[in-house]
Length: 254
Ligand code: COA
Image (cartoon, rainbow, N blue to C red):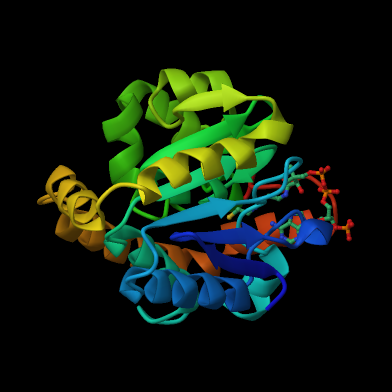
């Protein structure tokens, strides 16, 4: 799978979103590859930290809309849900480097990362409502918790994009650097983590997240049920068809 590159070296498993022609939008095959790679990294004693990165021009345009239409996720074992659970359950430090657009799951996956480094061109958005959908990846729980209800309403109900500066102010991002330096900074921080005792990293992350895993998994399940149902409803059909036809959606009758 060349759309997802996986490389492990010196205790760091680096997963690169590599589908630039489609702005790193994620197909079910890519979700499968990511889920498998995370599971392998979790089990591999030689891996101490995982890094998820995109390109300096784009992190991810979110779900591949065509793939979602023709191949909607079905059931809790669907690749997208395996990936999200893999993120929630990943026991070792997870670092992300984000540049350019990070749309939908491109933003929500970051809620499950421990350290996030952004290029100053990063632009985050969770336009689920604009697509006739609802939040996923437990973002309906984690976004209000992170940034407060008022900002969450702007980002989730209005679907307004937000900059790297806002993401840092609200606690989603650790540091902002020029786009050409984001992936390198993530690697540099990953190397620091990889030099530490794995047992302490795992135990510290477990304690930091104690009590949250089951709550997050429960919210993911509730969101998935709604998201799956809404995908085939008229609002999402109109939004996706409009995207494919390169026109604005018309929700006036929905
Ligand atoms: N699914 C499928 N194809 C996508 C895509 C997606 N999520 N995002 C981008 N693409 C395709 C475009 O259709 C375009 O294809 P084309 O060259 O055949 O016309 C190509 O990738 C380049 O995208 P383009 O929109 O021209 O790039 P841009 O730099 O102007 O804008 C984005 C980048 C990410 C801001 C914009 O593509 C976008 O908003 N994408 C949709 C995001 C979205 O709604 N995701 C779903 C979340 S659930």
